[in-house]
Structures are given as structure tokens and as C-alpha cells.
Length: 177
Image (tube, rainbow, N blue to C red):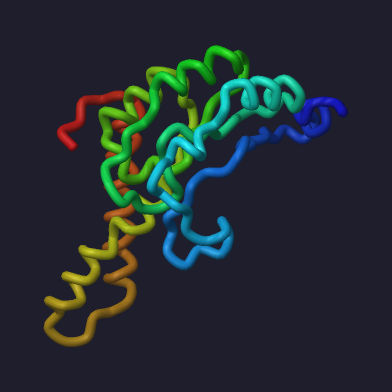
């Protein structure tokens, strides 16, 4: 079978794939098969040899790897296996590496991951949940009716602010967070 990029290259799209399974800690998540056992994240780690073979045989543009992250919320502080990331990067030249589960990873570890080969990071949970505490306070403190557009506008402001914060970290700009 020809590599994916040979099959879809004329469409101008890129292909992202994942070898193995990312652990999941999303509440009531049906898409990823429910919550994962998070007692030992290393059982989910991407095997460098599997990554190498997969990239060689498929030609994917982005390979998302598991090296200490989870979809959703963390039960404790994440501890990325940067050495594993380096090994996978070494055996997958020409393939960008992706990281799902960026939300909740300390920014110093995000910077280490980028410095060692990560080129795409998902931050869905961080951006999706950022407005909630602010909006709850806004609603609780409202003196009378609160128009939806005010809530929606505030939510978008918070999402924008969180996105800018994350982009600064990904550019490895100084951050106090």
C-alpha cells in the first residue's frame, strides 16, 4: 500500500495518526471509550519501534505519541517522559510529532516537549473549561437579569486570553504561569 501522503497529497491535506492508545480522563466520554486507568501511564507510552515502522509504512505527516499525557484532566501533576520523546523523534525523521493532552501540563514541560520535537499540541480542555469559573462568578454576582450576549462575550474574551497565553508558551516566550 502506498503511503497516505501519496494517496491524499493531491488534496492538500495532512494526515495525523496515533499509534496505540492515549489514556483518557474525560468525564462521561463515549468517544474515547470511557475513562482509562491512570495508575501507571507508562503502559500507554508509544513504543519507538512501533512509531518508526508506522511512520515508514504510512508516511503520515503528524504522529501523535503518548509519553505522559492524557486526554482531559489530570489526577496529579503530569510528568512527561522527555527521553522517550527524544528516542521517538530520532527514529521518525521527517515526521512531525504531536501531543494530545496539553491542558494541565506545566508550561516548563510544554517548552521541553517543543524543544525536543513536539510540533503540534492539543489544549482543548484548558480552553474549553477556562470560562466556567469566571462565568459562574458573573452569574452569581448579577443584580437582576443577565443577558446571554454578555455571558457569551465574556466567555469569548476568556477563551481569547487563554489562547494567547498558550501561544506565548508554545513560542517559548517568558511566562510566569
